[in-house]
Image (tube, rainbow, N blue to C red; front, side, top):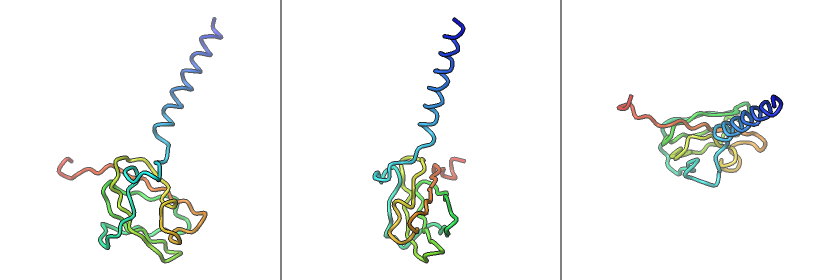
Amino acid sequence: MNRITHSVVIAAFACCAALALASCGTLSDIRDPDAIGELSKSPVFAREIVINSETKWINASQYELVKITHSGTGKSFVWDFSTRSFAAFDLSAVAPAGVIPSGQKVIAYVSEFVHESYM
């Protein structure tokens, strides 16, 4: 009897852990512009983030227009972070060719936009 109870507890714990990981640690689908935003042709942007060959991640806010410049390649692009979700995505997978060198992965973490009048 004790062995069955122990197995049930372990199985329940494993299910809870799997659900927690599935809801928090996944990257957004890069084919869905509503989930990750989109490349912008606008020459106007809120700020610039300069990345290099050591950069692993960047942070951005929902609805933010950010110019991303790679110091190694000298190339840049503007990304519109108008997203409906706040999950991370692989920015290097959607960057224009030649901006981020092949093999370098840069993850974009998007935080929820909070208007200062709500603070």
